[in-house]
Length: 336
Length: 302
Image (cartoon, each protein chain N blue to C red):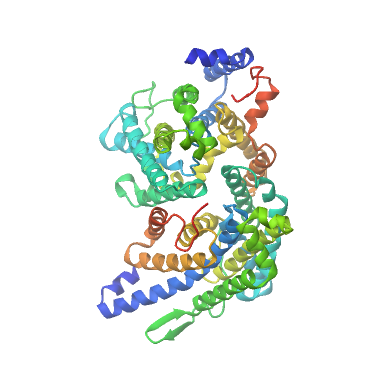
């Protein structure tokens, strides 16, 4: 399977992929702490963006509540670690379980009662906000004052408990992003992926040709929410603090989807590219508006940039870059 | 908390308290309903979900605040001015920007409106700062006593104003030629074009009318609530809930949903905790989506 995917890619695309991978692996040895911290955020958004993209871009189901899965993963693993000393290496499975159950619940309700399109998106928002308010009242999870992980000054990295230097977190999220990319690329070309794309392109036609809609949509939601939950585990241990009033918010979900949409929904490398464009753009805007000392200037330009991308590159940046760099094999149907 | 201690002091008092709370919730709900009408009109005709809904309402609140501070105009009197200003804003926004994403997928439209929302928050933040500010009217602490009921004067005025604006809107859509033409566009886009309607202009008008509702609702809301730039998202979510409960695109449904949410939020604030009242609304939303996804008064979703 993997070899077939590699064979179908153009040499130029493979060379570019190899170079980017090599640079990313070597990056911590030659960049300073600031650049490393930006790269870490970039990779985090590339990862969760990829997970979200699997649901909309591959299977055609729009979720605007992915903050829920990040938060559930984060809260589950953090609570297990703080209260019972369970290592995140074990806790991640609990986190996946909780996120998948939540995803399947929303999916089940949505797909069973044929809540589609905008309505389904609103259902996902409602679930995220609803859970946020509930968590806000659970004192065992810190309620509104937040949940904090103990920060220790370690001499060496403790990978089992995910306590350590930014470099360690960098490699963890880099590995996760790489694995998610490989998984998605494999899924996209598998029978499952083909079913998904059939549903995405035309649900009625897919159903008429015998694709069991409900089952395959549920699988998409389950994989997407599980992957996102893993991202939440990483998030909890990297940031060490969780607040319900920010974690579950729609604005958090928007941040997750932004990279994918800007990069190109439905493509493999779109979410990665989007994250690499947007996070540095945000940093640049912060630097450029720092001297002004006026609240809101940065976010204004941020909104302007997003609106410009929607208006002028509605297919995302990846298809455009893909053609520009001539990465595609020279045949028709040039979908990456 | 004060409400709760009262509630336990006797069954008669408690019934009276609940009635009082319900009536004031109903009046607030009428403003929610008016604001939700703005969302419903836009979605019903243009099929675009205005994710910058709450932010536009906050814009209306700030405009009202400016008029109150600079010229001392009562929020209810500045209502037509603010509505007109928001109408112009909505008209231009639809004609210059939103029109261009009509053919794009849902998530692109969502992102564009979210970007508009972010920009609106930023502008409000730059101009007014992050603090909550209110308009204190001279009748702010007066109340009407009707039998056992004691209702705030501002709330009564606010509710009545919301009803009048909603009534005007219904009349517009049912008795004027333009209103009928707009409904025709919403019912059948192709048909509307075939009979020669200027759909582009009518869409811009519709968006303008939708945002004018928000301006009016914002002006009224300033009587009850202090405004700050981050108020927007909660209004957006509230309007979604109301519109889905009432039925997307149904105008009476929006008003009905607004009243339902107003009453249930007020009662949930007394019976449960005030901070849990929005969880209650979300629960209601999920319930409605499952039992009747097209909403209480909605047509079957297309």
